[in-house]
Length: 142
View 1: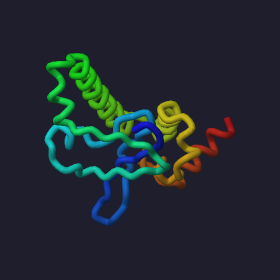
View 2: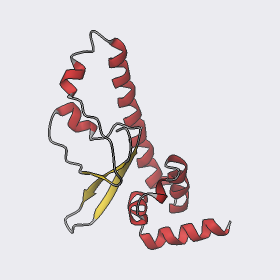
View 3: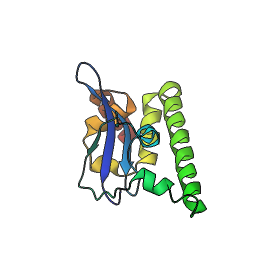
């Protein structure tokens, strides 16, 4: 993705959405599992702002690995990044309180809040919009 903001999210049986990830340009977007298996993406993505998105066929890229070893190394580094990011997020949701998660969110996604609705931020943090308002109000007092 060259420009824009995209979210990846889940919808439960009651129709409530939960944000799994934000992709902020420059970034690659999509479900890595789907990429590796060639199966349809089960994690919907939605552009939250206007975006410029480039596409590439995964098979065409992997066919070039033998000719361009640095391309294969880049793919491995991206896979490692996704794994570490996933594990970090899993630990944060369990080990940190909502205020700490919000502080990390602000560090990871500076200025994103001016472009997306607050309920998306709350969903990503695993809290309600009311809880997020309280945290933001307390942070503003400090």
